[in-house]
Image (cartoon, rainbow, N blue to C red; front, top):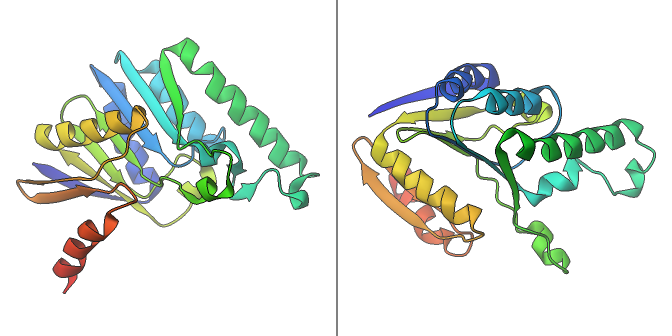
Length: 207
């Protein structure tokens, strides 16, 4: 197993762009935000040019109403022409992807009550072919990519299987908690309802 820590967006994107360009089978992307700015367009273009046949993006529904950390329907932004333009371009970008062989789906629909608005999934997960996985904190939006953040790149077929199963469940609209120990790494995915068990393990390690 090989694990690389990629600090900040440029280091992360340099490796991911290479992996996408050489992918043979699949590129699965789960992200909290995916906007039609420079960073979002980089991902869209790379996927459009990728030779792999299974290309999917799962975006939290939050990205449909919040762009550049601004709630597009707030009264304070009604006259914000720049935000309206970004929303229009993001909608156009997302709509063009299926014609390029890229499936896109919005996870965690809001529902009729404000309570669902807060039930967001901030996961950033990428699975490339059978053996490359990325996890961390970087989204595909320019304002987020400017933050000092990081991603882990993990080369392992076992870890790839673990994360691919998690992605597939999220793609189906399911959320489940799972954990696994592999050579050199211990992984836990959370479902939002029983996070305490996984957090207890993390806190034990810190102690």
